[in-house]
Length: 337
Image (tube, rainbow, N blue to C red):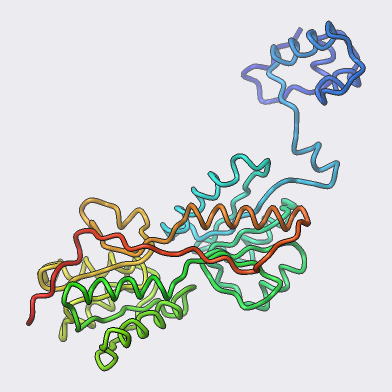
């Protein structure tokens, strides 16, 4: 009898049937755990399958039933926070019977192309991490299959949303800096990125709530280290005592420029980021930040996607996870200048 170990060809039902000396239909019956085969036959079929390394093709069986039990995930490969969320999505999906199919947005592969790849895989729902697509495009997509957007608000009843309370998170950041004695607090914003408008609003509200409305200072920033570096250079001529930054990647660029300019952090300026991604936790950065609860967001998003795929009734269209402050080494008491 042939052995399939180490060969490229995957053993089939016919191979198992030949090894066990039974019909293909009988092997299929045994593999589906259906009645109609004797205990001895089941033993022989299972033994043959083990010897050949045969694994039932559950995906093909699902396709024949019209199901794939696949949840598609669209994410940005350049964003550390997106990778953190994808890690938690895998953990959330592990015990559900659904699998994830990933499709990355890269410098050479835009969001529509990433989405089309998952549609071709016949995913039953899409999980989209901070998508850049217009609301109208997301609504059209949601007319084809369930769409759950993470880390971005979407004002359309057809699209489910799981997001962080961004305005509250920036309020936490400003309140922390005020408690440390800071009043000249700038905000480096995220431009048109997902969550940026809410974080700007949270900064303005927190400054007003702390009696600092006249000191509001918003500097154009963005998603990346380069954006943070450009913003930090703009601050050097009139340095605030603290800065709350749109995200941790942007804050990394800020810290790099400050280091090169020999501005001590936090002795001369405190810096606080947002996300608590893996960059923030690096020991040489030790970045104070506002953490998004990626585990909770992933659980909520996977649960909602499965509810939609199964046709279950759902409650609120938007689910919001609270943020929390993580204090590390880049914030400290204000030293008046």
